[in-house]
Every structure is written in C-alpha cells, then in structure tokens.
Length: 360
Image (cartoon, rainbow, N blue to C red; front, side):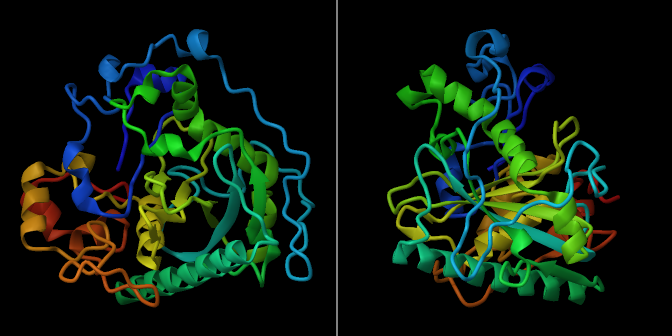
C-alpha cells in the first residue's frame, strides 16, 4: 500500500510509499489518501504533530560493531575499496532504479532490527536464505522475459555467490513491525511508534550509506542502476506486509528499497511478491486501490470484477488463490507496462484518463 505525504510532513520527516504484495482483499479498509482517511492521512489530520523534531527528536544514526556478515567458506565479509559519499555513481533523477534497461544490480540486505534477526548458523535461517535466492532468480528471469517481450534488454544481477558485493547483513535501530500497525491500534499513540514510523526510511538510508558501497557494486557488476532489497526474518505471526520505498521528489537519498517480510500470516513470500515490489521501484502503481496516477475506485472495482491477472493487482492465481514458488503466472498488462516504461502508450490509461507515466 502506498503512503503519501504533505509538504509540511515532508519538510520535517520522511514517510513511506508502502506497496504491500500479499492478499489485496485485505485492503478494503484503505481508500488511498484523502483528507478524511484515518490511516496515515496526507494532511494535518494524520495525528502527527508538525513540530515533529521538537516532540520526537531527529534520528541521529545507529551503531553496529560488525555490520558485515562473514559467511564461512561461502561469502567473505565485503570491504569497500571506494569511499562512498553524496556523489552518487548513478543517475538519481528518479531514484536508484530508473528504467528497465541494461544491467541492474539487486543488493540483498539481511536486516537485524529490534524485532527480528538472522542467525546464519541456524539451519532454518539458512534454508530461508536459499528461498530468497530462488525468489530472486524466478523474479529476475520473469522480469527479463517480460521486458524482452516488449523489446527491452534487461539483465538483473542478483547472485551473491558470483558477486559478494551484493550480500550484506547489518543492524538498524528500527522495528519492522510498525509497518503492520494501524493508527487505530493503541500503540500508534506511543511516541516510540511515531518515531519508528516517521524515521523508518531515514534509518535505512543511513544504514545503506554506511554499509553498502554502491560505487563498488556498480563497478564490479557493470550495472548502472540499483534496487536495494531489505529482508526481515519475520515469523509466521507477522502482520506487516512487504512494501517499497520508491522515488519521490525531495528524497534525502536516492535509494529505492524493497522491504521484504519473509513471512506474513503464515505465508512465505513468493517470487511474484519480489517481482511486484521490484516493479514499484521502476514506477509501477498498485492496481488494487485508488490513488496513484489518478487511478479511481471505479477502475479498481472494475479490474477486481474481471479478476485482472496483472502482477500489480495480485501475486497469486486469481482463480485458485494459490501461490507459486517455482514460477510467476501473473501478467504485465498494458497499464503496468506503460507505467514501468516498457511502452509509450496505454489504451487503459487513455480510456480512463489517468496521469502520465514518470517515464514520459
């Protein structure tokens, strides 16, 4: 689900564009952002004081004595050979992931936070790591094929066995569970919740700057764009959904980050979820709720009625409601192809009068 912000909030803190990719039917309570929405409104009715800095304080960083993961025999701890600072080694005009073209690096970050962590001596965690690798493989091959069908040559570079510059394990001073909380929850009134939620992106961006030498990643892989994947070792009981911090004007950092909750409500995220979140980084809107690019509730209701099998609406089989872990059976229809820059025109966008793509 996407969350937007007003200029006032943007000036004092950065919120998310959250794009969940599990059961879309659960989003009936979210009607996008309007002035009357009680969940993360786009104006002062959001429940957060505009004097955010005075009330909660600024995020000032985090500490971690050993931010790099040293995986015995397989993955060596990666040490940067390039000083990485504010001069970004890629075109940041619309974020770190600009267009589906050429080589694109996928950086895998295994995140330890206040509610979850990774133990790479634990057999279950190691099995999960392999599941993530499989999901990346299936998602990458799917997106490469779809792009090829539209005449675009794309090569996702994701295999950390080949490039250890793509694998990181570090800690952040945040809590992924805030992404699953509603303001209706009593916890939402807590100042710690407000601080965690409002600073979530900033904390991750600082962690990426301190731990991921993006210049090295691009140099070693030959890529010119980056998608950052942050994996949280969430339990079956987790209710927070996977989501993406995609680009918006005024972002403090250009990093586009997919926050992946490995498990949610007892379901392990499938490859289609990975592909769904990656496409958000390239401009794709969700098609299961109104708001982005002027997408209307009427359109949302229509595509639901016809069970549109677009990846940006569902990440499971719309007829059987089953998830697939060895392939992606969803489609990229004309509206999604247009918004991720694979086409210059969409009959759907033209017919419904939606806004132009960021690629146009």
